[in-house]
Length: 105
Image (cartoon, rainbow, N blue to C red):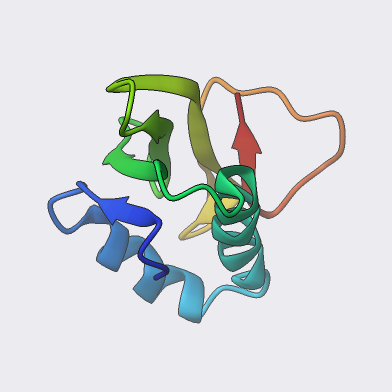
């Protein structure tokens, strides 16, 4: 993970990465992280803090300004799909049928 992404998930991120490594659309998780890194741009004072989320295989995030000590954009890296043949409930809406991870703000 890029140094712009700070893992504050207490192990949930690693669990999700292991699951994603066997998932047919696991690349969607990597794409979410790349999008968050792009949101930071080249600014040294911008980082992304990654947090656990209540939804299964999902994470929360906040784009954090270290100079101003405040969050800008916040949201989730939300898993859409099934686990063990059961649809995961995440209370999120997607326009398209998705099987994998998406950023929600």
